[in-house]
Image 1: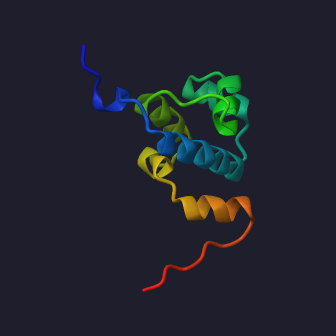
Image 2: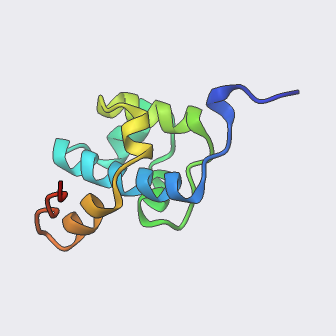
Image 3: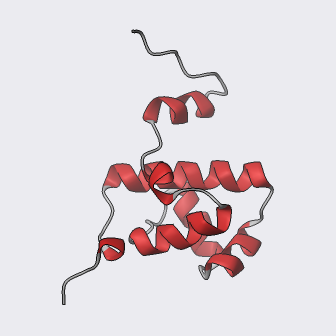
Length: 99
C-alpha cells in the first residue's frame, strides 16, 4: 500500500529542524513534555528523545500532531533555517542576509 503525503518519511535535515523547533516552541509556550504528549497522543519520553535527537520523529503525520498542539505550522518546523537554529543555540541574533 502506498503511503500518503502525511505518512512519508522525513529527511535527516527535516528531523533535525523539527527537533530544534519542537524544543524551542514548547519551552517558549511553557508547555511540559507530559502535557504536550497527552495532547498530541505521543508519549512524553518519546518527545524528550525527539528533542534530544535520541529518537526520530517518524513521519509527517506524527510531526503534524505535535505541531498542531503547539499551534505552529508543521512545514515551518520542518524547514527551520540552520542559521536561526545556530544563533539560538549560541543565544545570539542571526546575521542579516546581504543583498
